[in-house]
Length: 181
Image (cartoon, rainbow, N blue to C red; front, side, top):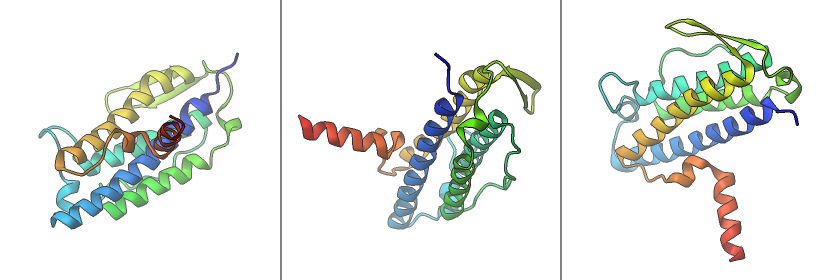
């Protein structure tokens, strides 16, 4: 049985981006209801040496885009490097990231799962096999940022739950299963 790198990467990343858009919509509603400036909410962080909410969103979207681009052998889209100052701009960033990954075909990502993928980080230039890159480097990066975004919003009081993190398809599956019981 062969492994489909596209299937391992694109649908889960689409799920994360769709969920992120939803929780950001809820965050915007929360800020409006509570009289909180969105700019202030976007500057929240858990610790002084951690990224702000805005930076977590930027890095999460960058990780997604760069990963898919590396695995597809295409150039990543240009990324606005300044963190967003409001939720509408963050949601635009999410939509642009989603549009990019949706532009990639399964054929662009297939091939030898051991093909070399080069990753330049601020600490070092790294080489991975494609599957190793996805499973052991990219996915942990993506899920770290996505979880931190969710947790920051939850800690601020935004009414979101685990189902919101997992996404619409998961919530629909649960709803269908409970109807059958």
